[in-house]
Image (tube, rainbow, N blue to C red; front, top):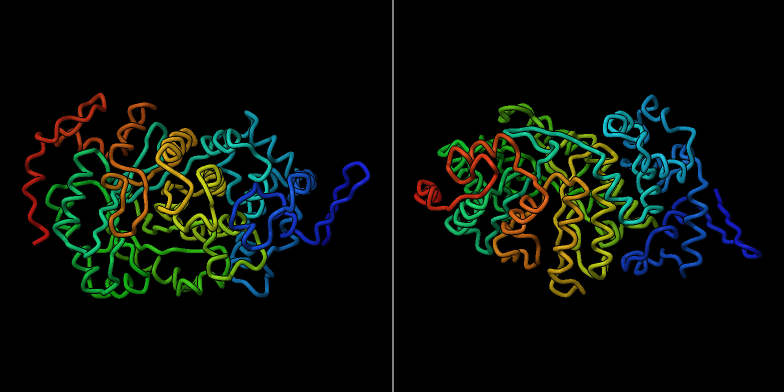
Length: 460
């Protein structure tokens, strides 16, 4: 279906819904690289005005990727909750934006309608928002999940310890983990990106982390971010798998490029659920996404990268994950050129994911050839925390020595919690207090109080 918007004596024509969404997107280098971006600001504004007048019901009748060609489209439409959608079904995209910003859209109401919102609706409304709008709506949406602790509660701000090592050296990994624990980090997950996907190496990392949290009774969960097929193999062999990880995308073709399909995700999810390793909950999936993943694998179908990112959240939502992490800026400046574009993408990802009912986290980061720096990361993490993101990364010194990119550090977690009065997950916080690493007021104590952690030899 074609769409048109007239400004004065000039008409702008948009051939279909995917074209309209792409032209309405705030500028980013990836859409320009794909030839999808608006040609100028006038065309972008015309597309946004046209989009604002579009009824939300259009998104149930026109797909940006054909239903018959794409299992992600089929999943989104076949699982759509019509009863939840009824609350907003009469609205246009612009009216939906205004309603989201109003006091009528409180946390309870947003939770009620989450499954009635399609990813394309969430993407569309975000394109009409300024950064402060994205922060406000993101902060109102809340998703609480649990495994060995509770993530996403009000007043809480969690972190992933990311103790990567270029040679998968267990002693080096353990040192990074203990360093993070001493800073009060690791309540979201202790998650290793392995340099090698070999099952023996992955299993050794899983067993080392399992020994650590068992020896010190740490109420958190672990994950090795290997391919899902490796994790499934290790689960069958009895390895201590807490969370099943996988990178996912917003089209079937993107996921095929990752070597996965929806049936494989479902099989792994069921297998992890059967393990019942969670103590207070059984949200056992961990997904990572990133704007530009479909374009980089030539699997975008002419759809802009932010809409496809939202569609990846439609996949994640189906599996009720513990964590979803948008790795913002990791793919490079070809997709998000500078700090401004990365910041905008981070706020879009957080808001759209949370609007869809997901436990969103953000890896706020940049590659070394991007036009960005640590001042940008400082701004991003403050905005992300204000926008209610569930967790961010904790990396020694902000520099991932295996993946070779810049992210947020253990010190950054400490700063955000102190500045905004936020605390770790409650079960993890009580463990920190028992270990005399934190006092009841939430102040971090001297690491000398946790000498027993420093004697850990479970990496040998």
